[in-house]
Image (tube, rainbow, N blue to C red; front, side, top):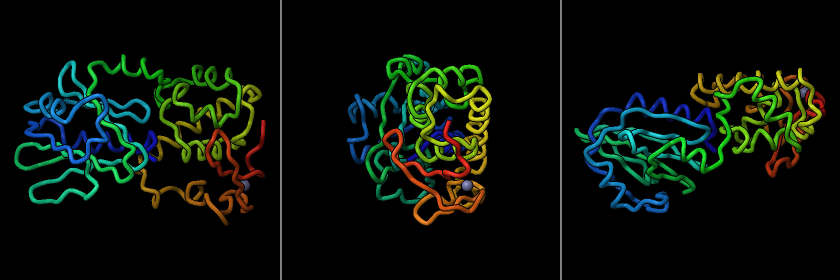
Length: 262
Ligand SMILES: [Zn+2]
């Protein structure tokens, strides 16, 4: 599932391929993806405009088409972007294709159909209405400590809650906790100030490193949990078998030796 690093990677991809080209048509191949906008409205409002810039918050990507018109993309479980030139053929599961001049196109691909496309007039208002918390890479250390430390429940559940901190999903939450050497079921209110700081640093390190590597799992450091998680997986730090448990409604992988419970 695309989390903050994947969506940031899509943002950078879109920024380098698809800005400042005139939109000549919007082809909707499967309308499930459209939220609160019809196929006709989407095409009518975008045609003739250009994507000017983009903004990411958590797992949402907003693409500006004019001062009061933003395209919101959410990638669901399997969404991604593919830019096509000339006679390149879009993937079979492309659901919406934005056509530019010279037969260049941007395809929103979404195999499992959990993606969302919407038009919004005001990004701040959207974030407010959704009740989304600050972006996981935009939040400062004191705010982070307050958000995590002042809430009850397992620290992992808090990291996953988009209304508290936006952008972290199941895989990177496990990675962040592994790096911070913190058990995912640790009660947040019991985590020490020092450990909260360490968790904050781990959050930045993991998300930024994943973005730098364009979230290519084959390039992630072997010292990361992500490349070992799963049945028969061994802790890259101590070599013991990894454990799993359902925490915050999701399957968590961790090393019960290296990650201490607060
Ligand atoms: Zn270990």
